[in-house]
Image (cartoon, rainbow, N blue to C red; front, side, top):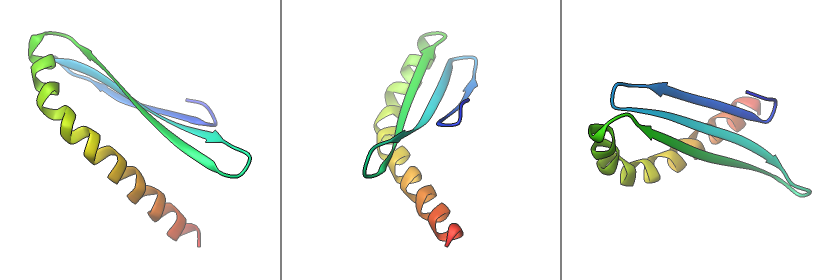
Length: 76
């Protein structure tokens, strides 16, 4: 973890995952980059994530936008 990056994750029997939230400073604005890394420990992990991945790609951006909105509201 750094001042600009937060890394979250969990290890499981079937797969290990990490999510990086990186705040990138740009001249006119800030951009939050989200990266997910998955390490499969066995074939069940790969099968599991095969079904989760489409939802993951939909849910993560919605959760990030909601969190940013909540933080902005709380800061006001």
